Image 1: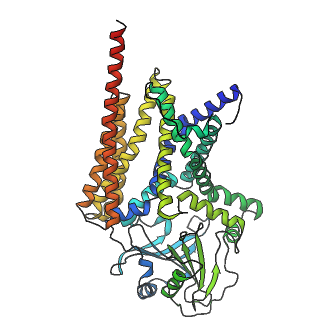
Image 2: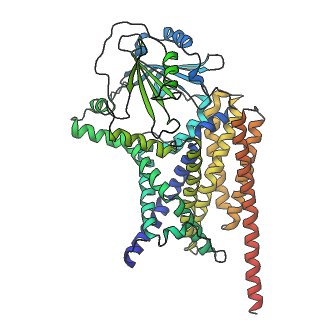
Length: 526
């Protein structure tokens, strides 16, 4: 318990409440999509019926990559990145670095291939600057969910500024809420009072806030760091330490090869390196991303990037010679040698995305993320309940319901748009997915404005959301059966939909009992 004066408590309550009023709706969207993005890879695999091979990077790569290398201009051999997207397809990007016509920093430009790992056939070939290339249709649902979380699907750097600001707002709310807690440990086991609406809402808000407090601080700080590190941090470092030279700042922070040797040399390929890094003590896992630099030269090198392996806390990167496959050592996240700063950056990554303990930590992060969503929703709802006599606050309450339930509903409609278009008109996947999301938002706003306010609006939203969640696995199963992991997500959606319908029925029954109590009291007092 932190003791503060009565006046300080009042100011903290104002800060805590008004931050929710001013930023709560946008914050809810970022937190909800972030909680779901923890399982974005699984959602991506589910969206295409588990089509891909999970360990495609461990399969035969070199023959197909060698053929593609001969197809692209030699200038694009400077770098090659190979990864597996959420749908299971391999994405190979041969590129170099050039400034766009308008000037600015050099950007990646080259040829991108999307490859089906089942038969190693090229699904699509695109050429141009990386930021201008069309979306990969097979992973668009995954990418849309991540972009909505990272930048609210707005252009950079505006989107990163917005989410970074919202991260700081969440941090302020968490800290002020912590100070306002009178009995932090006792509140972890609080039983919400059922008789009075405002007391029940406050107790549930306190309970959710107590359990998600540490999580909110962690994701708020790390999220703000990732949003501002490149958009503000790097330019400031460049101006203060490198006379405005951002490229030089990047080289010092990230690290570059110390020596270059353009002498032609045979490239060893990726397969022997991946086999070695999978069994080595340093990594012991399949990489999620591979970078090849200076292919076909004596200074060629291969860098593999890994999620935390079993028993490890940090992500890892390992460097190999591209000529003989010899191991060159571990590549830290920052700089050229291991350091405390590099470990801290790696730690922030795994903590923000919940990667530190495999599947279990992702489940916990999802649960705490949803608790933080409820915390945001209930806090604003509580603020509106106390001012419900005002027309403006009643409208805010409706917008709060539309955001809380409507965002989830809009995501289900976007998913339905993806499912309906992917197998039939894949070239329209982007349009159908985005139009589905916008349609879900519009329907939610209409329901919030037209329905009677209060519990009936919430009940209708719960029913609509429940039915849409149940419809999703039915729609996906009609397309392809998929493996067990995909069926696991189908089952999760079905259970979530049923729980939403049960909540709608209970809210109606609770309201009926409350009405009966009021009638009995009026009869008793004559």
